[in-house]
Image 1 (cartoon, rainbow, N blue to C red):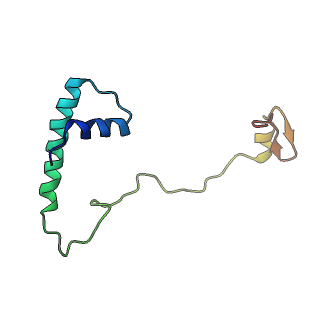
Image 2 (cartoon, rainbow, N blue to C red):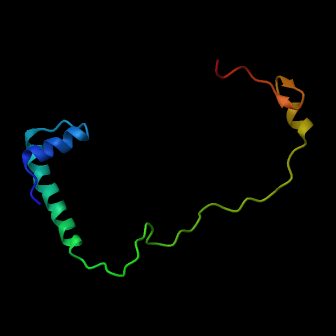
Image 3 (cartoon, helix red, strand yellow):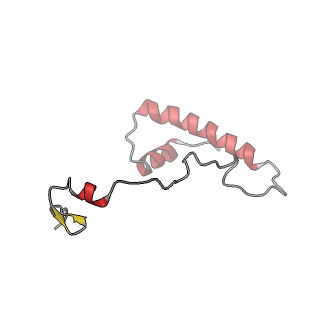
Length: 95
């Protein structure tokens, strides 16, 4: 698919890009070449191929949560500048 100058300007407007004249010409060629690659991909027979959103196995990089002993509540609250019962009292963040 060949993109013309108006197509590139329309795409640039949608992306809120200001383009110089030489950029318009260059992008017209580059985007046209990119679309030609997609046209080739559209010709591939995908009959019997399951749709997928992830082509590689998903592996969590996070470690497992483990319960560990914590400090005593009174030790933590004793360091608070202001407290109210079992809570730390702070100034209002929102009005």
